[in-house]
Length: 423
Image 1 (cartoon, rainbow, N blue to C red):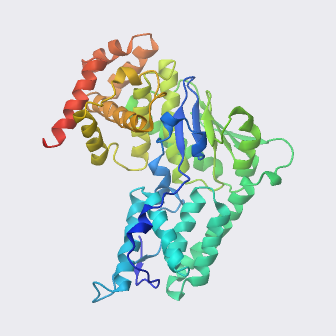
Image 2 (tube, rainbow, N blue to C red; image 1 turned 90 degrees about the vertical axis):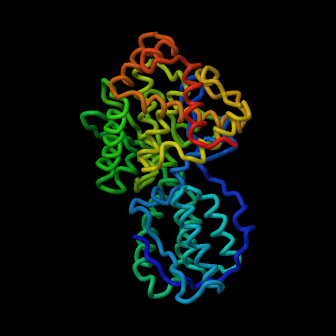
Image 3 (cartoon, helix red, strand yellow; image 1 turned 135 degrees about the vertical axis):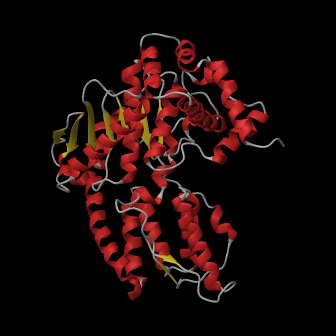
């Protein structure tokens, strides 16, 4: 539960503060060889995948394992147009943006606040959360120290939390420092009935429940995917977790850009020392791809593979699988006759412009949703099996839902158009 109090930092309502972009989103995409790439470096992302930022990674829920928590202001009694009242509204707006996953907007507002009033404790608190999630540990530490220096006695609970979080940051910074590495990578193994995991020994030694925590995330992913797709891997799935520095040393040579994970039959992923919602949602997404590949023998049709993984990931974050604004965006493209045929999207999303790539992901989510609404898990499992048996996409679709790729295009478009009144 978020507590509310009167704000102490006063600053004017400046719309320009909301316009500054923020870097640091995480991008995930499959290349034409079926390898999953993850990176927080936009310069390394192919143009067609550049808009594939994961919104859930930027939600406040994923920033710390104890969830959506932080000091927030309440409107001063009897005020309606004072500076304090305007401050409260803007701070509330920033927190609401974080809840919706609009972290770039929230971070820009909070940074602008500190340019005008460096002593605002709320802004330091939330910027510390954002910087920590994005791997900016030194900046996060600075904001937490600034929060401790400016927070008053009525924020005592949050001061205690800030001290605990500084201890967590020390672990994260250690795991990200290649200078701390000595010798070869040491992996510690653990397993359950359904997973065989290997952990960077530095991760495993940070907290005694690390293996149990990530195995719990993976079992959650397995349960969700099994309930939605009616299938699970025949053999235990391998997953390797690395501290950031260990991952870079082991796999930097594989890629010409910075990555934070990939899939090559096993899931390889950079993990925080203290895993939380961001890692959990990422594992849901990658587990879906792993199941799809095992059952179909590949990654095509790409739109179905990606659409299913997106929907599973969003459900893991308790977010809508498809928002009204996303469907409105697709409606505009339909009206402009800019719908991308699913046949075009079956091999991959490569070669698309940034705008078309964004639309391709939304179409994939919508098309997968249309199929989910008209099938049960058994039918979806049969659809994947048919693809693995060599059926064409059209044959498998027709058996499952009675339409081929062109028919699915038309049906999804008709659904979207029916949701919005005619202009």
